[in-house]
Image (cartoon, rainbow, N blue to C red; front, side, top):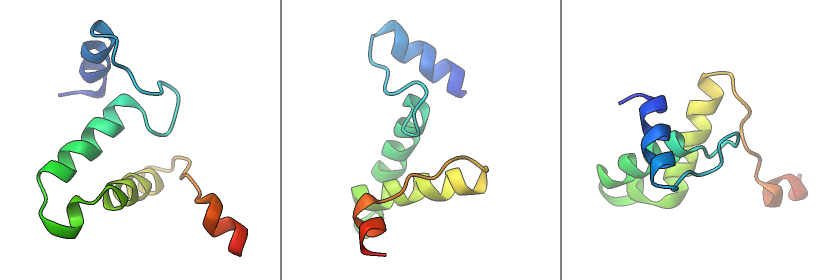
Length: 73
């Protein structure tokens, strides 16, 4: 299933997430499916967000920063 097909399906049902955001509809769906298919700690929301950050870094995209971590540095 392509990102375009996901976006089109979600748009038809008025269920899109941020379209030009880090957490786009295809990325959120991918992270959710990864959570569902895992057991234990890998299924935590924090793990899903970490997976997204790794994906973004590996593909040369902007990685979200943790404002709480940035404030302590």
